[in-house]
Image 1 (cartoon, rainbow, N blue to C red):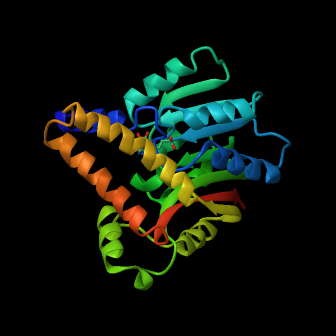
Image 2: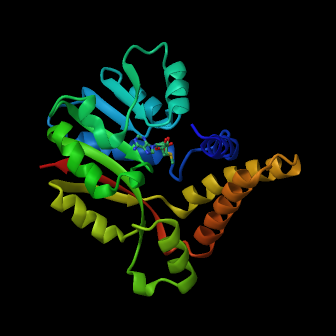
Length: 257
Ligand SMILES: C[S@@+](CC[C@H](N)C(=O)[O-])C[C@H]1O[C@@H](n2cnc3c(N)ncnc32)[C@H](O)[C@@H]1O
């Protein structure tokens, strides 16, 4: 890992200490898992993957909801993988590995997974590319749950500053409607979809702001990378709070056709 990557990871972890890694809530994750399970071919999923698992918050929810399932947890970041390994060392049902979600065929045989959960992690690979790749390893009737940042309305109706900010912050940002169409074109049926609510965003921001204040008051935001990352996060929070109607995370619960 380069020095810059190391500093970026360090400040990310400090800003997110005891916070979620992305907007959402445990109840939203459970809602998505229940929705997925309601259409599953078999009564309960037996092979479930949490990809881009971060430090394993949702892995724990899956393991709790489906105690008989084998739960795979994968992330590209070795530091997170080690934390999740330590966290689930006593749970033989949870298998943790370093994985790149773009190349999951290196880990899983074709059509062997019942459920894939990917929360706020798909953007490096792209929503459509990930869904296409995952359809190879999902069983027929298996379900992918993906939460992705998107625009709630058309670009032309966005306030100019929000449009400029989001199209720069996330180059491939598109509308909720387009993501739904991409899912359908990738061979999935949309079972349900729901948004992270303004209150859930606010709770996430509240936690982050508390950490950022503490870091600043102790003069711990040092170095160009840390300052840049904190400013970036503050700008994003400011934009979400000023224009909550424009963009946000939507959960898509998608059944493979
Ligand atoms: C915003 S965090 C979300 C973590 C977790 N899903 C959650 O909601 O708490 C994004 C995660 O995706 C991981 N990630 C990014 N690109 C990835 C890839 N190509 N394959 C696997 N994991 C990836 C990051 O390391 C990070 O842990």
